[in-house]
Length: 240
Image (cartoon, rainbow, N blue to C red; front, side, top):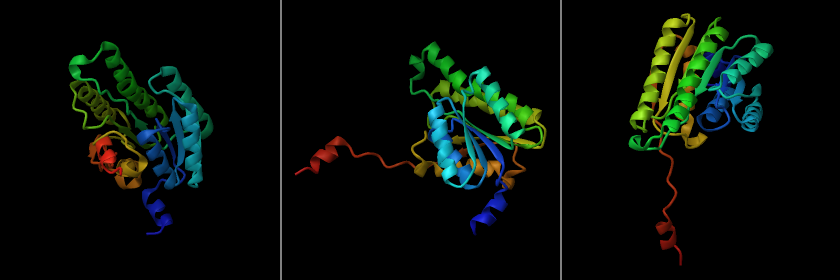
């Protein structure tokens, strides 16, 4: 299939898609994937240099992109980010919210401060994104929430995923039927775009016209394991 036919099939050419956490990890891979399908990418990240870098990368793919500095767990940042988008484009066609903050702390050692940091970074940011998305996607569109990876089964991380699942399911009942809200759960943390492509492709599919009938679903995405670096012992054993 030639690229033009693929773009027509997905229905993303010229669509304005906001991607949070776009400067790194899954967010960067997803921004590139939407850029390859000729969407207009709004790259949002708390680090303005990372947002600017990924916007430049998307433009190098032949798409239009703008960077915006924004932390979606901070109410003022959220309002400012959506306000800038409204000034530039009026309305959005889609939002991808990447909530990729995880905790490696064992449950029994979790501190209260780290628990609140997780809630802010993942749950509160998702709530704010969905709240504002209801206003800016009123004409139709999609939201895809990328949730913390499934391989972390610590109770506090599992509860974060549960809260985010509840927001997705609840938003489906509140949003107009023209707006579809779904989530994806990667099998592991981001490991580099080469190994994270299945996740990026799943998110693009959920934002495309081929998924118009999918609402309120949370889909697991199995990702390949990247090659592990050789152990020091193995390296030393090969030395003359």
